[in-house]
Length: 193
Image 1 (cartoon, rainbow, N blue to C red):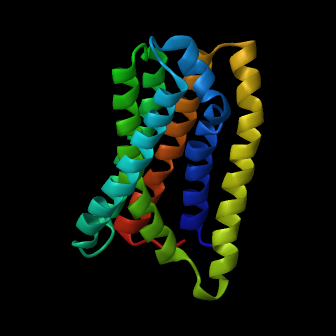
Image 2 (image 1 turned 180 degrees about the horizontal axis):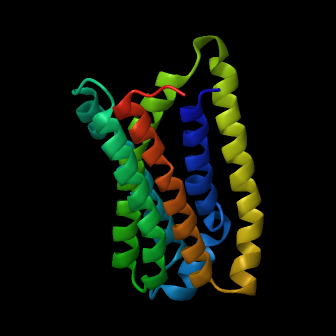
């Protein structure tokens, strides 16, 4: 497996896996901390995030595909990853629905920016004869990391606080985003380790 693939997997393990810390208990935090929230409002917040990602990633992908090479893909991958990381810190200060909806929009936008570039770069370095295996390694590692995080997140929120949990998520996500700098070096200096 190419080193770029391992870096992309590690990056997603930190970013997606860290958000797994809060996924099963996100609604509990919102109900405790957001004035006037309901289960319907939490459902709408999730819809905002997913619809934003679904629509915007098409626009981002068309724009990044217009330029030869992967410069735009790398830029949007990094910006999107950092944006998602920053959203987790923003959850600490959510006290009304408007703030939650804005953060969910930004989370969706971050995913929309990151996803097309991630897929293009991963696909570029994948070996055709090992494609099934290399995609499965990604899926297995990120799924197991997220599953483990889900179990740990509940404990952390109970033993410490949701604030601590969001700081951990943001920090881990930023670490995951930092791994992308290696890919910049790989892409722009044409080194092939």
